[in-house]
Image 1: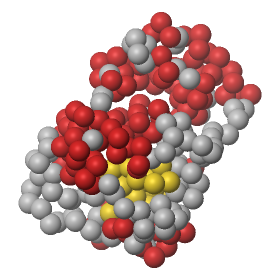
Image 2: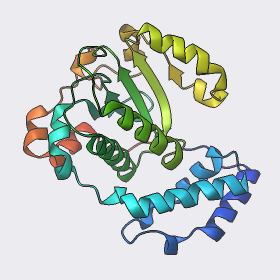
Image 3: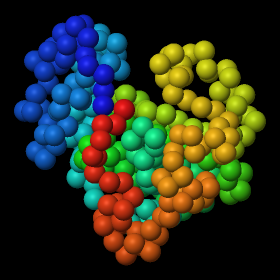
Amino acid sequence: MLAPPTANELACIKHLKENVSLNDVEKGDEAFLSEETYLRFTRARDADFGKALTMLKECVTWRRQFRPFAIEANELAGILQLGTVYLAGLCVHGRPVMYMHPGAKNPFPAETRVKLMVFLLEETMRRGYTSLTWVFDFSKMGERGKDEHSAATRKDTMHILQNYYPERLGALYMLNTPWYFRAIATLVWPFIDKRTRAKIFISMKLKNLTDCIAKDQLVEAFGGDFVLPKDDIAADPVAALEQLIPRRLIPSH
């Protein structure tokens, strides 16, 4: 659950509402313009009226074109079964956990990979969650040959996350990070805002992950007891989501 808005944020939210309304969104996407959405876009631009409005308008335009709300699990059955990116369980703060395995073999094009990411983000929103906990496992980096789709996937994913899904990061845990990644992170660290830095944990130890994700909610691959319903994902990806992420019963942060 997001913290209550400040007086400055309330003024910015009022400005956004006056300029972006339900008349601006695609039919079927009306739920996007919630109080939470106005607040997230306000906070993403530090309650700057002009910047927040530009960001929200650009997002609405993108949603009309990309139609993320209309993506269905059955469209992505193949890549869901692959298991390179998936949702499973909740962290100790009640946020859904998104697992990513950079470097794992993935025969799907960038468009499909990005579509999967967007679908999973939308699914958490539909289930009532405001933010996510991310687990990046780099242990497979270097195992595959050159991936012609990885650069485009990375670029598009970062753009979408930063501009169209602001304030969704609850925590980010990175495991098995290669030395060069840590070196790059050291260089860019000073340019990341303090609020975001507090949520990012580079070179997280696997043994410490259970402090953040209870063992019964942590997938088996990371030493937990949560069993991924792989057969169910293959047979019915829609039904499998009910096993992976429950609809929210308690506030998430």
